[in-house]
Image (cartoon, rainbow, N blue to C red; front, side, top):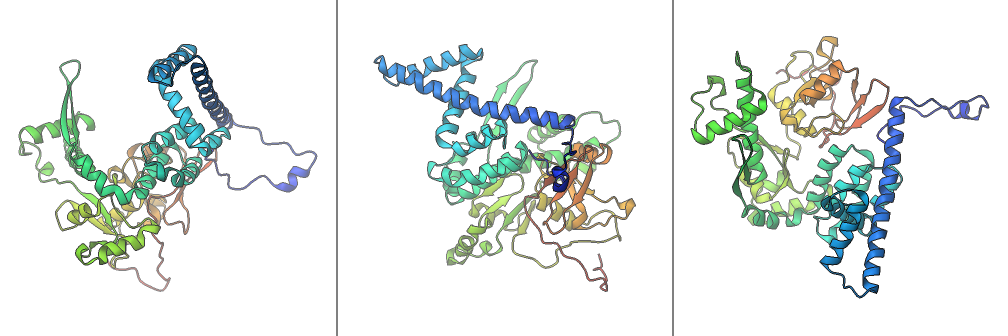
Length: 442
């Protein structure tokens, strides 16, 4: 579904009587099976909904009103027939009803093997949580997104699209949701327990970011054998119980969270004079009329103004062009300067491997053309990859190329020759210095 061959077979050769179609390789056979599964999934959803309709009609003909008891009976019938649980049957019935009656375009795409069942299920779950008046407007864009992106990327970008469409009601929804913040303790086996915290996403990401940063410093210490997850849990316990990091190595003390907040430039004007709000409205049609936090998504504009007020730990990024943007340091240095690293991560928002959603803040910055092979320390040659995909890129037989004039998109070429395009969350125009100009000093 996501294979984009460099060029189609030569048309002239297809007219030749001796032309033989290419023999499918092992990956083609898997793709063929996946396509069949998508077609069958669509048929199953259609037949499940038809079954429900028939059983409801039979119940009505026998004098039974459409009640929860009738629905429970149908759910039990389906569960027993399929040999599954009632909970699974209930979810199947709900998704079938949604695809057949509310999102037929998605069902058609699934039936044509243009998206997978995973895409369809994620679409139903997300759209059903949206106000009904917005669903029809969002559906075409989400179907197109599902047909062109792996499930992981689709989920992340779908969330952004939905939140962008709902941005006008975000302050109200945030105001209601923040009242439900709480801490829940859940006992587990083996003298362990879960500590759940429901709080604003900005603070949650900041807490996780600080714990991760401290854990990475501890992981680098001699004789440290704990995993990053174990270290993160220990750090949180130390901070919450002791309140300090005095017993940790000096390098780990004083670490604070850093969260990128992206805001339209004019939106930071005084909202009381109306100019800021007008500017936001003017940018709404382009998708730039709202504030967002890296790894979180849209946030209320008042919250963004608060975070951009100069408090330590928040990196403000304005969508209006700013002078001094570092785009390249050429071959003068291997390690990108902090401003360039921030720009690379901000542009991508997540690992730039197909389908990966690990936040860019937790990724390594890779020279796509290796430094030792003449690669530049430049925006056009730098991409964030998580540790796993960074390893695959260097040792798994894959090739990575920046796509010229794409605003930051990269193309992955697999060991079998298949091509996968990954676009960044935000596009940055590419600039080049004239040949006769010296690069800026850094």
